[in-house]
Image (cartoon, rainbow, N blue to C red; front, top):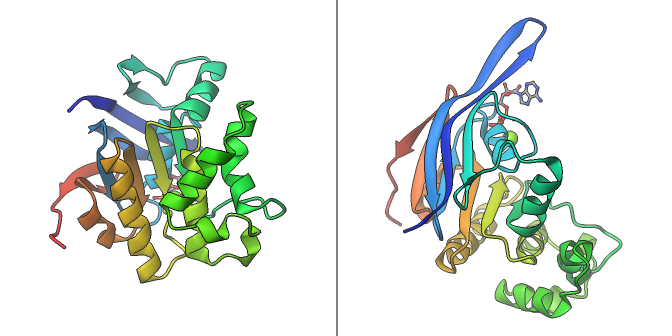
Length: 226
Ligand SMILES: Nc1ncnc2c1ncn2[C@@H]1O[C@H](COP(=O)(O)OP(=O)(O)O)[C@@H](O)[C@H]1O
Ligand SMILES: [Mg+2]
């Protein structure tokens, strides 16, 4: 399989009041096209830091991020913004849906930002996630799980190659969590590379590969058979 993403010797040190906090310590891994990789670690282990670096929202202390064969950490801001809009999709713990727009309008929003109306694709994405009946509802009337699935549809509207998910099931009950993990596995099967960070070890069994993140290092974890 082709590598979409290569992380090489990524290190992130936060310096505060003369103190050094090495949050990521020489982290390396690669992600193939259509691979679903999960990182599991407790609060404060550097999960969000890792995703924020890959999302190009923060700079690294050392290391490289190679996406589609090119180093991207040192691109100009405008190029980074283009990658975020065109190639990356984001799902966070909090859905970030705009309450005054319908679910369909929310899903279509990143396309409108690009100057393209993709209402049809938005409707198809919602249908694919079993959300057709909810397309014209307002987000506050949806359950937590439904909102999160709307956020996944929104993350997919611009056809990203890489989906970055930061604790996307943090607010959900067990059944709804499983549904989201299954959705991510299905997206990977369609060729999207999915990186998810979570403190939920259950997620491992839905992934192709799983790492534990601890003390700034990542180590491979066994996948349980489900
Ligand atoms: N902007 C920042 N400035 C200084 N320290 C930070 C910053 N962001 C995160 N940290 C520190 O980095 C460590 C890892 O944080 P984070 O990546 O948010 O962990 P997680 O997402 O696993 O809970 C924590 O000790 C946190 O306090
Ligand atoms: Mg976090």
